[in-house]
Each structure stands twice: as C-alpha cells, then as structure tokens.
Length: 553
Image (cartoon, rainbow, N blue to C red; front, top):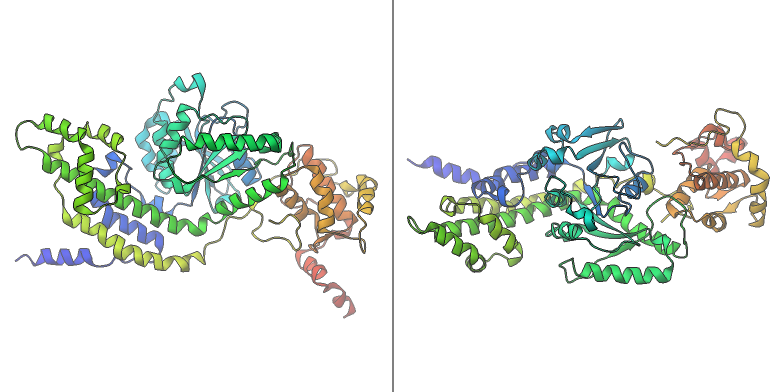
C-alpha cells in the first residue's frame, strides 16, 4: 500500500548524476541542501539561497581597505590598463562597489541591471535594496587577466567623523555577502595610515568564517625607509592582533603595488619576492576554484545542520498553550545551554555553531512555536551529500584541473617567461613622436644610449640579461614594469640585447618615467630597423641558430 514511500526513500538515497564539478555542486545544493535550508529558515538567519550562477562564476578577489590605500590602483596594476569608471585620488573617490569583469567591449553595467541578469551571480544582492544597487556596478573590460578571475573594488572605509554618516544600506552585510562567495579577500593598509577605524573593525568582524581567504597587504612601502618600515610592520601586527580572532600570526605582504618609480628602492628585492608570492596565490585561483567551492559548500552544509538542530530544539522546549513569551525569553537568555545540548546530543563541532550574541539578537524576532520539528530525512539528505556525492566530486577535480589555465596577461605576463628573462620571477602607446613615420623614434637618442651600452662591455655586440639589468634597475621602476620592458625590447627573443634593442629598452624606460603607458606590442615606429619584418618564426630561428642553415641551403 505504501510502496511509493519506499520508492521515494530509495530514490533519495541514490547517487546524483552529473558530468562535471560545477553541475554536481548545483545538484547537490538543490536536491540535498536547499530543502533543509528552506524548512528551517536558514536563509533568513545566515546566507541567502544560492543560484546556479554562483557555482559557474569565476573566482572573485575582494579588496577591502580605508580610503586612499590603493585598492583601485592595485586593480589597475594587475590589469596594466585603465578600466571603465575607474577613479583614483587621495580622497574617497570610489563611492561604490565595482565588480571588474571580463567582456569583449568596455562598458559599465548599473547595479539594478546586474542583479536582474540570471547569468551573473549577483541576483541575491537585491535583498540590500535600491539604496545599495545604486552604489553597485560592473566595470566590463577586455583584459586577459579577467578571463581567469573577477576583481571587486569596494568603497573606502571611513574613519573619524565620517563614520557617523550613514551609507543608506547594510555595508557590513554586503561585505559579508561578497566574502562568502569570493575566493580571496585582500585587506590593504597604507604604510602611513595604520589605524583601524570602528567601521573597518566591523568589516573585519563580518569576515568571520572566511579567515582562510584573507591576505593582508602593506601597500606604499616604498615611501618610507627600511628602518621606518620595520617599525610600521610591528605596529600593523599589533593592531591586527586586536582585531583578528585567530591565534596564528597573519601573513603580511609588503610592497608598492603601482607602476610608478619606487621612491625608496633599498628593499627592491624584498618587494619583488613579496609580490611574486602574492601574485602566485592569485594566479592559481582558477585551478583551485573547484576545490574552494566544494569547501564552501561543506562549511555551509555543516552550519545548516547545526542551525536545524538548534531551531528544532527550541521548538521542542516551547509550551503548548500558556507562557510562550516568557519561555522564549528564557531560551534566548540561556541559548548557550541549547548549544551545549545540541553539541552533546548530535556530536556537532562547536566551531560550526553560529555566533552566540548575533544569533540571540536574530531569534528575538521569531515565534518559536511556529518553528518546525526535526526532520531526520532532511538531515540524512545532507549527510549523504557529504559522505557520497562530495567524494565523487573530489575524484573529478584532478581531471578538471588539467583543463584549467592559470591567470595570464597584465602583471602576470603571458604565462611563460621569455628565454633568459632577467626579470622573470590593450593600452595604446601614448608617445606620439614618430608615430606613423618611417624613422625609428629611439634612434634620435642612439648616441646617448651607445655610451651606456659600451660601458657595460658587450660581447659580440650584445649584452647578457644580467648586464642589462644593472642599468635598468637604476630607473627604480618596479620589476613587473621592467619585465615588460625586457619582453618588448628583446625583439629577437635571444635573451640578449644588441645596441638597437638596448636603446629601445632605455627609451621605453624613459617614456614610462615620463608617465606614458607601455604598449602590449611594439608599434612600427618603435621596432628597430634591423628587426622589422622579423616574425615569430624568424625569432625562433635566430634564437636556435637556425637562420644560417637556411642561407646555406
């Protein structure tokens, strides 16, 4: 008579069918987790329901910091180009959340349109209202960096009297929303502004549960001497110790993340090593994205189970008729005892329980008598997901990782170093002199560059990379900029510079110091005369010594 119940139970225990990790995560959430969340009002207390776009989205990097610490400049440094709507200044110029994403054409998409797009992961941001959506937009740019990751710029966190000005929306709630969905959170500090304001403190507190995603950057470190930097670093660690609720010492990346001349370059090697470490963490985000999403789903599932146990426990403690309000008040006051009972009865880790004071405040708005009783089948559904479905997804990750590329372009380079590149570890060139002309523009300074070239004692008319580096680093430009200069100047890709290539390198360095952007590829008027017409295949022949054999044939 009740065979259909047995069939339904059997169907519930059958493994889910999926073809890839993204599809599997979505099915796990919809069929295993979402019924538990909706039954016990998980989304009202903790996180909004997830959409399919959340699982398909590229890894996001969230940048947080007080105004004028270099958040927008950091993004520009990564992209090596401006992006639509970019505003940089000493005062709070970024007054909105900006999701910098990839697209074929540069454009700005307003927040309301962005939240209504089902292909984007921002639908649930509508819960923060129109006041927030008017301060939210997407900057779409055709940058190769954004093919692998998305970057989120945030308004400068206020300090002093400015903190009293209301933003009109739940700022910390929005930060928490992004923190829950992003793959990395970068907290930026200015070497000259280490104070952590009350608003900044609340924002850091809203990152609870996502501490493993946090990276701390001490920016603008080139503006102070090594002795001052030592004291600043100590002061920053002291300030962070009072805010971060972790026993471990936080890793702080020190550097100057912009493409201008380093004011104090005594610690160039330190800045270079720190930058490489941070950029490597960012660069591998696409490869670790699937594992990160699985990890986040498991954390959410554990919290959802604990939440269901707590809600059902509160329901079981309520009287049937009289004294409901008094009992509710007593339960909220003694919520820690409820936590202890749930921990003891269901063997749940105390680290999975929600923050006590915050949960007490939220419970005050609900009628406990209307809470549902514990449904073991919903709990079992989640247990099946974590014990069986997740295990199958984990087995698929190594295969998908081999098909996923790291972040390339911009400050990350092409993904492979040029031969013998001494700096290893679509902008338009704005210098107009010589453009659309036949003459070689750097040739006007050839005699000046020849003096430096001969002083370095070239062998066979060419300078090795290590010799050229001795002169190039004197420009005090960051290594990422000098690496790009080298890639442009070493036209034949032989790992050495002849006189023309050396002159081109010095010309590009001078142009950059004057404020010009470097091109992604050399325009005709900058290509050395002897290298014009030299294609990629010809460059390989020169590097491999194959050119002379062809002449001999």
